[in-house]
Length: 87
Image (cartoon, rainbow, N blue to C red):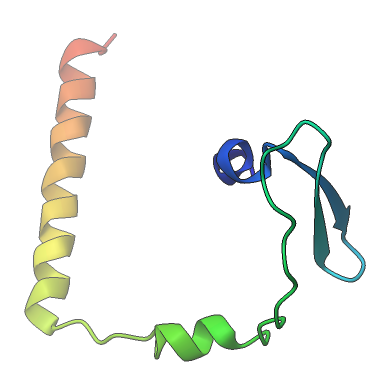
């Protein structure tokens, strides 16, 4: 809401109804924006329909390369920590 708030909500009064999941907009008296028209409410599964399947397989080599890079990074961090912060 903070990201979209300034450009979208400026010039409008907004009414939030968390029970029904609706937001109402009405231009205030000093606003130069038009009134909004109502449209259809999207189905709850709309994002799943648009996004398609979310599960993706990862190749075996990519899996082991990523684990190897994580191990190298972890070892580097621990050796740095031990070298500069040892007692």
